[in-house]
Length: 174
Image (spheres, rainbow, N blue to C red):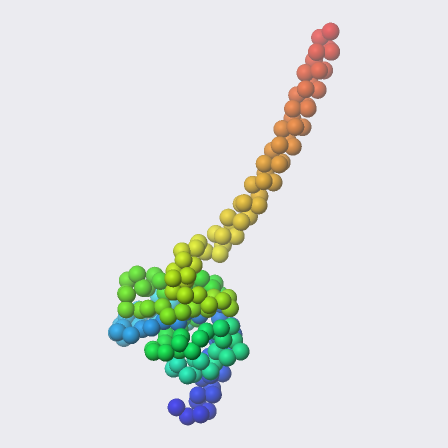
């Protein structure tokens, strides 16, 4: 590859690394062209980009990006990267979804929101519900004590009204 072409690829990768919310490094050894196409289409359906890149270019492009936390050992062997720009966990979930059907794909490492994750940690992350569901759970958890407090206040006011009504009836009866 010519120097100009390499510099262009590095610049493009660096831009992608800076924009990506999560990057999953995979080893695709042993996969056929058809299997790679299946992986790409699965990831593309979730707006996740998958690229096969040269180790040196990836290492150079990762400098001064969130991927700079990775060590030299992560840039050995064949590298395919899944880049997720919107939901950081969507790409991770889709990679694991593919791995369930095809065990040839292996996860080397990943960086999610600037933090490195081992394959084991990443598997646990992939089991989390989507962001919207987590936000709903948080909102529900925050709203429940407020609802209970509002019910308590309503009960106090209602009981006071019942007591006053009973007192009024008692005095009218006398």
